[in-house]
Length: 255
Image (cartoon, rainbow, N blue to C red; front, side, top):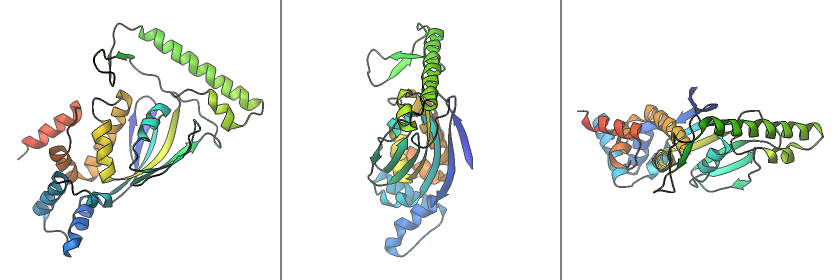
């Protein structure tokens, strides 16, 4: 099982994978009753499909991830509606359905919430010109910010445990816990939806925390589907991300 650490307590694990680059090629050529025509032609086909937005063949490559992230990151993640989300949720979220992927989240109704909260390594301030993003803020009192949040975590978790000891049900006691609490979920997603996620969440306009998760997802995608990843960088990626843009330049300069 491939696992990468993210933030202070989070992780992404690639649990299962199906299809790959050849799954895309075979799905695209089945209309003509053919399959692989060799690496060179198969790679060109994948690039053609992405360039011209013939995207359904990419739905035949599927990833299953196990994710641990703060609740506020998960809520951004679940806004990707090319998917079906069945959520118990530590924070009491309900059910949303559409198509393309699936998420099942750990439930605070049935499981006692662990003492695991996200604390930023560096605090950020609003960007004065762009309300969508934040920026480094060396002028902030970082120690004070951290102390305030850690105090909140200790107090809220102590109240949560005391409510449980008084006989309050878990589904009510969890309401005192903040959005910095870590949650876990399984995410099954096809390559088409995955590329959409990377395009939006690895970009500099996304929140810094979810960018870190999107970068790990992108690395795992690149490892499993190198032909599609290279074509994605060349034909579909339009975002700003130092790591991904450097990879795009490297691929473009390769013979």
